[in-house]
Image 1 (spheres, helix red, strand yellow):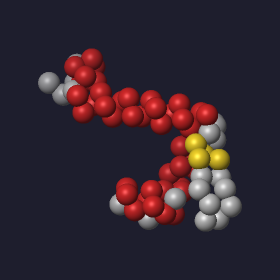
Image 2 (cartoon, rainbow, N blue to C red):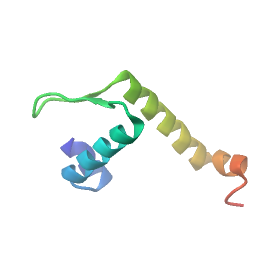
Image 3 (tube, rainbow, N blue to C red):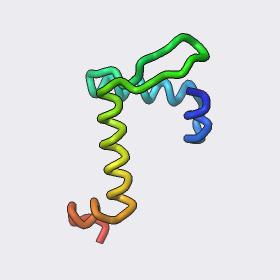
Image 4 (cartoon, helix red, strand yellow):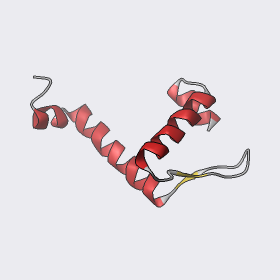
Length: 73
């Protein structure tokens, strides 16, 4: 979690709060939590959310999302 927070340029506690909030909003668990110091992994639902986020990010980068919504022109 610490490494992910560093990549995002935020502190670990902020990242944990944001993940917990997202899980609460979605009503599902995104991460399988491990013991302290051990790697976490995405749940099946977390994998789906991550794939959808990557798809949206790619579409935004390509300008496809803006043209579909009619915004940004």
